[in-house]
Length: 170
Image (cartoon, rainbow, N blue to C red; front, side, top):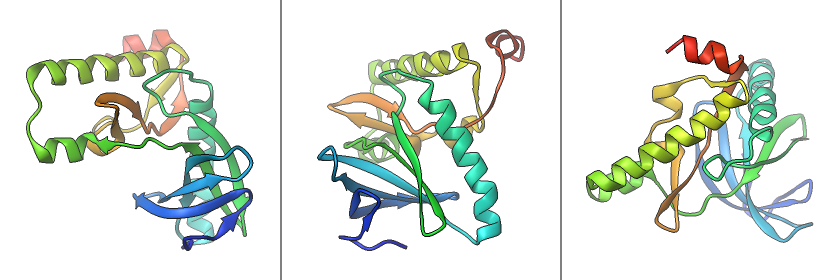
């Protein structure tokens, strides 16, 4: 676990953002470029971290090939004291889950979110990237609103295939 104020590589930890099954995410300041970023550390024992590291590398490689307004940008993968971490775009806003807890979405908002999500997924599929867990990973917790519009998915990828094989699987 990291502490606020701690510096890892050239990132200073500002706060804990949250966590999931694979890791913990922190808000950090990139001391070289003067920007706020999200830093995701893998949790668990070294043997479990090795498997998670392979997943993290696949995720970062896949995401780094994508340049889309609705997909989170990956900046780099690094390691600190034997613990790998991924540095990515910080999406400041609320998650779709948080937004849904406030009040139901209007039909127009729902349609706009669905269209933007489909556009992001289509961009990934066009690069041969297939998402690993439709319900779990593309759920409301992994979708953020920035400036009142859907901004990005924190997509975790696994594997790749040609676009044709994706289309045939539907």
